[in-house]
Structure formats: structure tokens, C-alpha cells
Length: 182
Image (cartoon, rainbow, N blue to C red; front, side, top):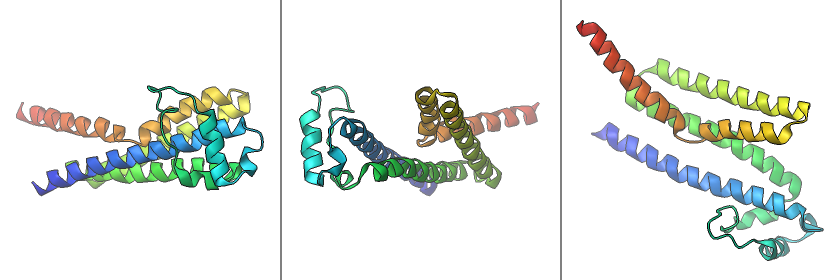
């Protein structure tokens, strides 16, 4: 019983963290994208930046990218700081979700070897995503490579790894029992 309560709390925590992470990323991307199109934007004060962005906002009630309020503290950062923040956010949440997914796998399997494989899974897919990005940048396909590597890192910054690994463990356990009973 205690294990299932901890598991539910971890899932709820991961969902809350995931939503906040998405909110920060969208805010940073929104300010970077629309700030570049406003002359002198990154030389403005935080309140002037906010006013300028709001004046540019598109009314799109079903588009979360346009239909949200940005995090106010982001306007205190310059363009270089926002780009660094964007990459730092990715790294931080990759590590955080690796820990969350590894903890979920540990709670379900009680197997250190499986936790090790979760970390290896994260390291491998992060390396693949980074390689795709670098290769795309070097070959002139930066936008396409960024989109692809973003999909991979986006999946890693969620509960998707646990949603794959936990059912796989369950199926392996069933298969093992069936094999032993024959």
C-alpha cells in the first residue's frame, strides 16, 4: 500500500513538474521568437519588453503558444541569457526526469540493474539527440535536426520512459512465470 501511494505521488509530481517545465520553455521560446522581430527589444526594460510582446500577441484561443501568459521574470533576461536558459532547462529537466523515471522503475521492480538500464537509456538517447542536432547544424539542416532532437529530448522529459519500461517489466515477469510453469 505504501509503495503504491509513493508511486502515485511521484506520478503526480512528475505531471506538475512537466506542466511547469512546458510553461517555462514556451515562455522562453515565445520571448526569443517574438522579441527578435521587435526593434530594440532586448535593450528595453523588463516592463517595456512585456508591453511590446503583449502588443504583438496574436489572438489564437486554441493555440497554447499564443494563448498563455509568459513568466514575468523571463523579461529580466537578455537574449544571450534566454538562449543559455533554454539549454539549461533542457539539461536540468533531462536529469530530473531521469531520476523520476529511475525511481519509478526502482519502486516497481526493486531491481538496481533496471535502474542502471534507465540511466543508460537516458544517456544513450540524449547522446543520439545531441548528435542529430550537431549533424544537422553542420550539414545545413539545423531546423529539421532541432525538431527531431527536440522530439527525443521531449519524450525523455516526461514519464514516457516509465510508460515503456514498467509494462515491459510486467510482461517479462509474466513470460518468466509461464516459462517456469512449463
